[in-house]
Image: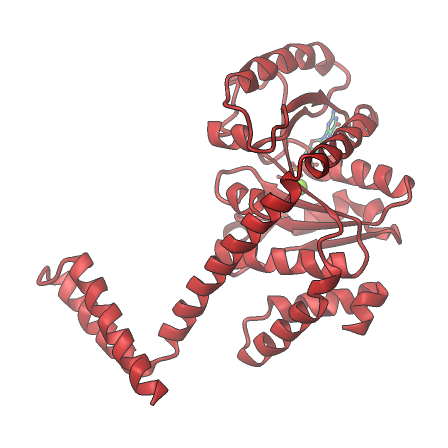
Length: 324
Ligand SMILES: Nc1nc2c(ncn2[C@@H]2O[C@H](COP(=O)(O)OP(=O)(O)OP(=O)(O)O)[C@@H](O)[C@H]2O)c(=O)[nH]1
Ligand SMILES: [Mg+2]
């Protein structure tokens, strides 16, 4: 823990590995680590970045991260890739695309552990974020692939949510669901260079129009539409200035406190659900009851609802016996 607080990147990496571990003995240590650093967390600006595969997230973050470090801040980048289980992950690709940033002493880059459920990965990313804050990173960037699974989880752990979009890619929403656009504090049209420049102008006008139709956000912030090119290095400073303007806005109107409290409450409930689930799995006698109930559902003797209710009764009983 002292190593984390000291800002030692190796120790920070090791602490995140412990937090990500599913082993029971590591869970105890992980809990102690997270509790131990809690009072040193909360100071960073938390930025979520999403967009369809290939939109240019990693390239953008490479340039964006270096820009922020150039202004004297330390940046941690955490990635959640819900597809990494299936495809084996674009982690290697990300590593190469953020090569310079990864070598920068002001940066810390960490891909999410694959092989867990989405909820699990998201929960661990949140803990990794807290560890990075305790280690003194002032800006936390969480990258996720915009395929509609992990955005809500990311939105629930960040302050600022950035959606990257391509210009002139036909369908105006590019498979990005309306709900994701609605969560965005800014939309950035990427690859605004070369032949793309004129398309970019049109796309910006279209997105301004589209965002205008959404109801006002609880933060009281009007979402911005910007453009950037990671290759040309243009528009990057404006995106950072927008994040800073948003940060000032939510500190001035108190939204940051209200929002983070809300996030912590939902975090608590998520953890509770997880604890119950783990607890259920840890009761061998209950497992037999559950299997029997499953057979009942398969044989259509029991409705799924009735089986769930019976499962809860059996759980209460099992816990009652345990407590005595
Ligand atoms: N012209 C142009 N191409 C870019 C720019 N940024 C990224 N690209 C290209 O777009 C492709 C995808 O870029 P990535 O940064 O890997 O995109 P990503 O969104 O991280 O992709 P996934 O991690 O696979 O979801 C690469 O071939 C990049 O070279 C840019 O600013 N301009
Ligand atoms: Mg990427």
